[in-house]
Image (tube, rainbow, N blue to C red; front, side, top):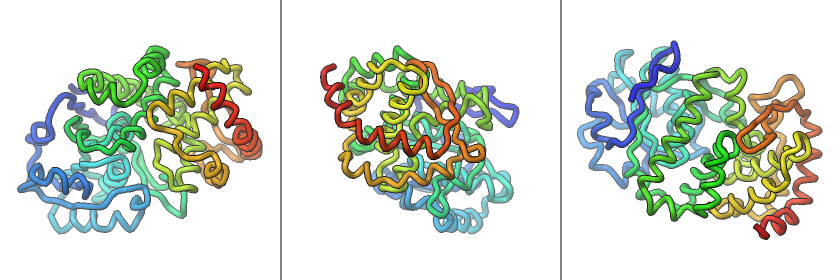
Length: 355
């Protein structure tokens, strides 16, 4: 379907289609395919006859150095301003590829084919791109909407269990922010296996999550207002991710627990939700990292958070499930609250186990 979304251009959303069907209308002569090396190794037959740049992907690879082979391939393959970069991979690769497409020849068309659950429900939608620099996550980047996004769920058949968990971290975020029904469904269905064995339900879930994010992006493309809500769990999560090298979804899961704990203190959120959240996250394979390791996280990265305003951070909290609010907090307030949270979290797990 086509979403007439922003004055900057439309994005074509291709649900329920195959990779080959989704890209068939693009000229192979004018297209460079940037492909995750793991994806290529598993599905090399899907890329026969195409101009390729194959990269190892991962958060540690999302930097200036990794931009170089992509730009070189665009130049060598003769991709001009009428051409396009088609990125096939997870969130770190779509971030990097979209960034390169936005600066090459001052901007060429970008098409995204997400191959991980996290990328399908989050990273591919909304036009954000970026690379890491000097130890700070996504500090260099732009907002550059893709012309098309193609969801081929067959790529999930080879997805490791840990990557399923990372995707559900973002899905749980959507439940917290936008939908009590989704929150209840996730609790009731009890884990990843249900969705892996019910592909129709999984596809509907992905479409719902894309819809939640797309609606926010329609309202606030450049993140001046409501789009900030999508950072629930991410302010601290990004700092933990870079400090400890945790998977994105695992780090965000810890960030959501902290944000919900802060919400109980700052907005009056019911403590019942705070006690249920760790149970929910654990049922989807998250919060695996021992608390002793989390204690060692360096959260100084929060000082460079993109939502900072002077010496304060627009911190996303909840007043209720489905109702988010932005609260201005200083780094010192966040640091003090974090130490209190770490001290109290083990008892929170015990209480949550009663549900």
